[in-house]
Image (cartoon, rainbow over all chains, first blue to last red; front, side, top):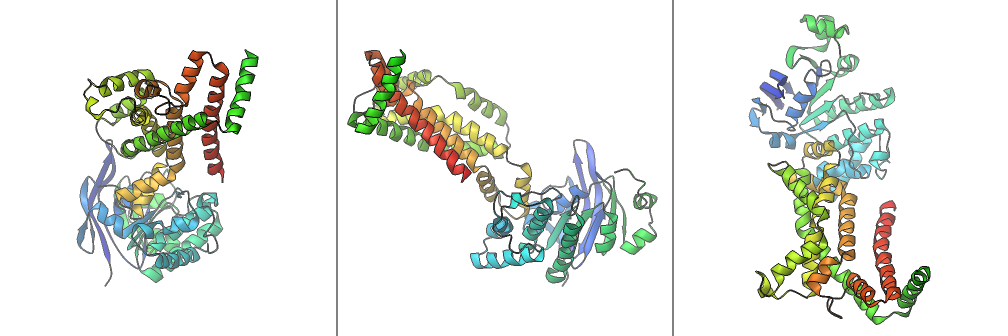
Length: 239
Length: 229
């Protein structure tokens, strides 16, 4: 039975600035939903609410028709941040963190860490200091850390921003592979339109905290319904 | 004067190498009393530091400011207040703690509380704010997140504890007023130095001062060495 994420009328304001204005969307497992939009459009705020890191001012988040509080969301989802954030520990300890706090035993943890590192082609990096790795390698560790806990909702905030093409390709392939293997809901925030076109099963265009368009990628790029979407695709909107 | 200083250093090495029993007992007592004070203070200071470093609550800035202000409290003033509290006629006189090693430990523990609280909370606050989000998004509970942040700032916490030990070990006012400098009971390195100086035994005072400094520097150097390895 497919899992189902719903956000209903989500609003969030930061110091009188409306980051999200009555946003509603839904996503099912087995595909990638891309959130596209210029910087400051509300993508990251939306992801942070889905991850349970922020509480919306209004609206609710439902998973399989059950209302979820932020602490519930933190147990079923995980987020990979745009900025590389590493614990000052070895790679294996970084990847094992989510498993240890969930109470997995040593053997299960070791197997999952090894599988997760292999999926991002970092096998053999277990005992390296995570903060000594390159930016691209750190982002792959972050992805492995998220994969290891096998979340029901995987939230990716610009995971390949500022990365070289080879690391970006490894990350994109790993994301595609994890969906086939674990069948989780993947929400990818990006302003890289080529990436959105390549990876997505569905595209949500968000602008000034509002959803403008939800469409199939081919449809979105060939025939955008909204004038702002058209200008965004042509690169006429300011970032 | 220069000769006196040289004589002091010479005597210090003679005292250390000959294993003078009184010097050794005073040194060990100093380590024991200040070590116990550091342990005692850590019991209440670390939870306060975690609260200040990782939580938000009304009055936090005021509480933090109060601890920062208390960093410079004169030891003799604290010693006097505690003396009045612990003396026979004072409110805590029934415990008969005055002129015991425990009274010095308690006094030093209070003296170093602002050091541990201020330095540790600063170390916790200065960890990357995104690490808290990272721990939470990986499923950590609040206490697990706090532990992870503590671990990230472990060296800052250890440094604050070492700084607190050194402060307790090298202070005079509390040890003198609460301990009374009783030979074989409450005499510690700093009170011995004060006594020998008053007696005119400058070289012997210097010898004790050298021992005191060797211990303070050794602790810090050992910490730096461990940090590098």
